[in-house]
Length: 283
Length: 283
DNA sequence: GGGTACCGATACCCTCCGGGTATTGATCCG
DNA sequence: CGGATCAATACCCGGAGGGTATCGGTACCC
Image (cartoon, rainbow over all chains, first blue to last red; front, side, top):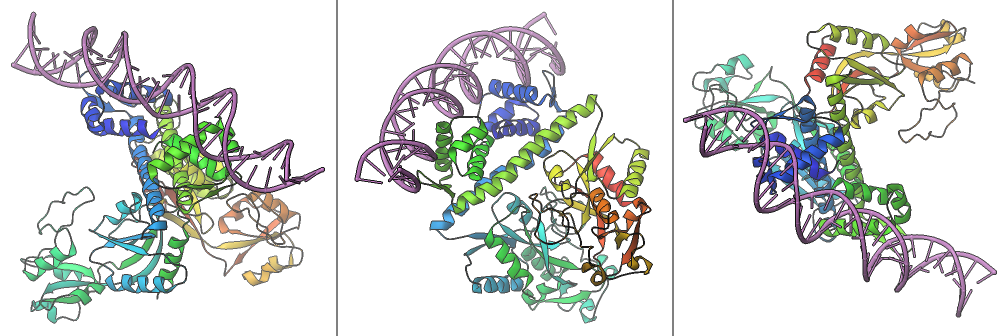
């Protein structure tokens, strides 16, 4: 199977319309129809149920859609990583590390310092992204390693090593009655009048229904808490970045957050291995 | 990047010889040279250092070799799974489960029974393979789910759920002095005169150096123990399959063995999800 | 040191595959 | 019934991909 055929099929599977799919691919409709027919013949499988009015995926078509998308991602990742590796000979970055913009600031700093101090290391490019995007960047080959936070981020199909675990704290406006307590429980903060927990976007970018304001990153979150419009539950380490108008109280029964370093399972690069080793020896 | 180009490059990267690679690919050498040049031009990266006598991988070439192989595996897996999904409409198997020939016999039986009893299930084809091969079969798309045993099998880049954990026992010829003991430690059995621990093959099929006989599967192992040529450390559940001329003694400090069910991380199939759910609820 | 074997690159030709335009045929809708 | 929509078919063309012959450079050997 050629990647061209796969791209064609994925386009049709997503548009469920040959004309639109062809347009999206930048080709005419007839060659697209032919390519799909040929693919079906070669696979010995009907991928699409089509009348002259509608196009639907068959069982086999659904499988090829999911599996094919993953395969195309792998091909693109291979291409991107190769390009980056080629640049690193002449140009700068040898390794790209991705993490959430708002997390693990101190851990990351220590990691980069420790790694840079090792002999034979390469420059590390740090990519900061929004929550939940690390996995995608890693899969797409835009990064070589990631710092993830369980259970928030999925460790989807990567190798991981645990780096540190921490409890969580409730982040509240300074002066809120609860800030006088030495600790709270989840039950204490889930139903606070006027201070709902915010909603984070799903992986597809939409927000789950519910009360609470929509947030996209940690800065927005803190802003909302400062404004007295929400309260939040965050990993303990966020305390270091907390402005003076916010206060934090440990939440005893909130799930523990584990920071892990993750990388693609087949990675054989010496640089990735070194960085992971450095990270696990940090503590 | 087309899979054809990738296959060509991987062949050259593995042979380090254009002639042999071309032969392996079933084409002539000149078109292969051209294809690689074209790939290098498109990527803007030198992949191979070549003189008229030798061919070596560059840094970027190594990256593309590793990443490209993984990508090709993903493409092949997509193709195979699609073919199987198409067959399952007309023909038999809807789901392929792979496990070691010698392990989890009882657990597997219970799982298959429980799954078959659920509504809306599909036929499950059971594939038995040698130790350490499950991951490969899963990656290649020859199977949809696998039963693995940590820490022996790598859970490489899959999603997993733990099913059960068990201790390990030393398997010895019946009548051996140690069989009188209620338990032993690793130290008791590592240096037994005439009863070395056998050697298992590495993933590449070669055996690590050392004393101990070479074994490829559990049957060979038991055979060797029965012959008084080796002793073994195996998961407790193997006791049920132990012939009368062998005896088992718990090893207190041997690593615990965890049976996990594993599947490709992007799998969206209802059948896989059902099977996993059934498995986790087994206990 | 020249001859030779080896090996990747180049030159050149040819075929067929992938893409384009024009049209058909089927289905739904007013 | 007529028009609109959409996938399939018919037909043509250009170029990408493959083959053969040959070149040019390097190591080896008598």
